[in-house]
Image (tube, rainbow, N blue to C red):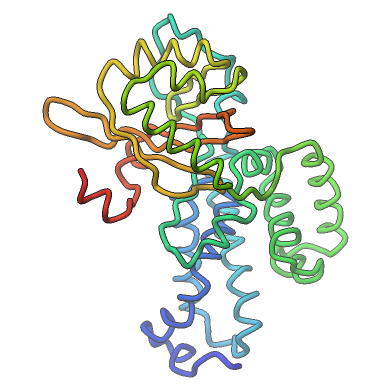
Length: 318
């Protein structure tokens, strides 16, 4: 299969049709390097513009895919160089005291969720974007992140990765060896939510909406972690988590409802009820083991909560 001549000739619409089947997987790849959907989008947009301007030398469709990954990888590395490594709340500070006043939003940069609202991308959503694994990747130099993603997720050869990163095959092998040693004790690269996980998430949504403290207590693991970027504060254990929820979060009413799986785990969106009406207050990703929540990863960053696309029916229910 060859690249269409009109795309090679610079036809913008033809190029858009050519890259459309790859766009979501390219975003997922950029996300693995940057740990941010917004940064991944920026990287892919830069890469697509660069590719459109220099497509003339690529004729074979298989070579085109590898060529696009090379351009996106390098665009993502440039973004990662600007932002620096992203982190989880517990990597940045000790757990907070729920009875003390919280500090304002921190500078981060924080690991963010992968926003993908395209149903046809379900397989991409499930594979190799688990939050803790993405955070583990962020502990690696950016080039090692890219090498791991290209080799262990996308199955490119060492020679192909060397060409993409403009380094020697020996350098790629060395980077992979060091990266895998660092990641050995890390979290799972891939996780797929179970029906039991989703049932627990639905129960949590009901309990949270009803401000049912006992119901929430039953759903939280004793050693649960509750994070809420961009606020640097986070809480360790069900006692401190519930204390903060009671004193601060549930002081105003909420409506919480499932929005599907995000980063392989059940996710919810929370609408905070005010005198002026409802406003989007948070996106919550629930990491569940044996029916109990071990990590309540809540994102209160307005650009995430407000920008999140939600199912049409939820919009109609508001």
